[in-house]
Image 1: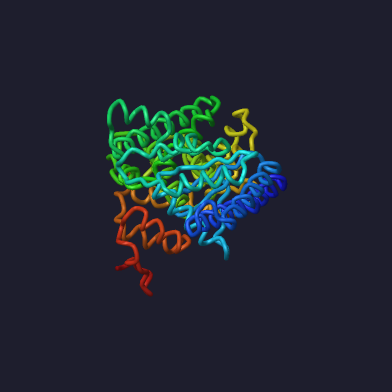
Image 2 (image 1 turned 60 degrees about the horizontal axis):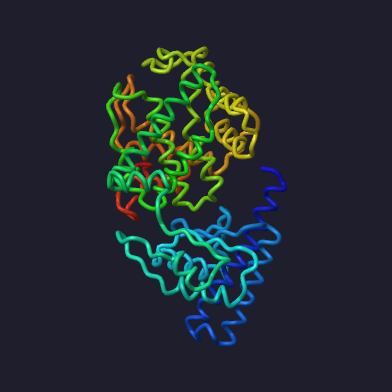
Length: 410
């Protein structure tokens, strides 16, 4: 990531934190004294100044909640002292009102923002009911500098729900099968040396991430319902599973949106280079010799080269390439540049190891979950392994322990 991009992220976090905090303080004063009190009006004017300062320096300001975290322009706000109450209030308000995001525009006045707070603070929403018409209420109140989005799927998912009245389980199944199909297309692109479609990859990963943020259980269940070997291509299914597990861990950790999407795209592509290794070498029951291991070890390099040949030289593409290039920590694999392990690399390595051990292969049956966790605890970050165990629902939260013997027990 370039120095300019890092500075912009810091600026967004600094100025965005001031807006989120001032919005929270104004809302609390509005609740205590009402909108016409002098203290409330003064706080609303200060909020308008904060929004104007952000828009003048950064541009449009969008606040959205994901799980227990608050993001400003896809940059996660830190729970520093003084921000914890504001973040908790935003998360609770979005959950209770059905809000998905709030977008501020420059030029809003204090009285206008005070009316907006009145509308948002009085909105209530219950799961399973249609979201409240917050946009119409804001327009009726004369609020023009603020736009909201209520909780809903992307347009494609909304159309699917309206036409077929599918449940979240069916939606998760549809997204999971699309992940498999996209992984199979990526394998075909690597096999024929055709360009990858990174735009399609990113859009699909966004849909999966959105579903995991709101209703993770059906998509995790789709990963757990493993098909027998031969029903579908192992590599395509493996990459789809690793993509879902990686995104689920990243969502639970509150990783910033842009890093989360880069991780998801990398997980959906990282093993595509395996298609250039002959099938009899990939599925050989006996241990691989030096020649076969050398050929197998170059599969990350082939994916990185395909990414660079795609014609997309954006920072997002280079972030994907960096994760792919570093996803193996085995000394048998060749190094491609500096091997600096990041949280995204750690997540991908853990998800890859878990799904590989949980899958039936020609030379061994699928491993039991307690055996998998014992193996993972010995080779990965224990905190990440515990989080993975909670995500996939091996045991109830808080009951997973590692014994002094190295075994996993409850």
